[in-house]
Length: 118
Image 1 (cartoon, helix red, strand yellow):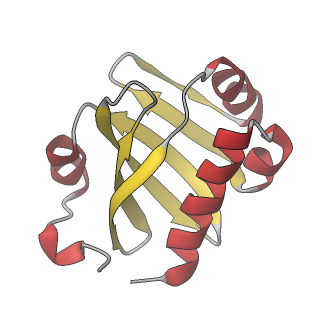
Image 2 (tube, helix red, strand yellow):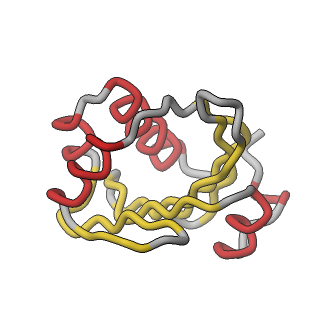
């Protein structure tokens, strides 16, 4: 487990929830990839557009981490539970992929219950 990877992802979500786009960009690599089942976009401009359109607040649940990959369960304002998978390199988020559920996020990243941040 790497504390800085978890701290980076938590800070990234704090910035997203606060709509602090400058901090969100600072915590992201120049070529960050933002994706979900409907498509992907890359770079700081794409991140700013995506974040500006994001109108929920994310509450972080269980977190899993291994070798620069962080997966966490998340609850949105309407109670919907999803999961996101992140790649963190040198304290910058290089990718974020939203999954419909925790199981698919763990399967996509090869993380298991052994990687749960207790």
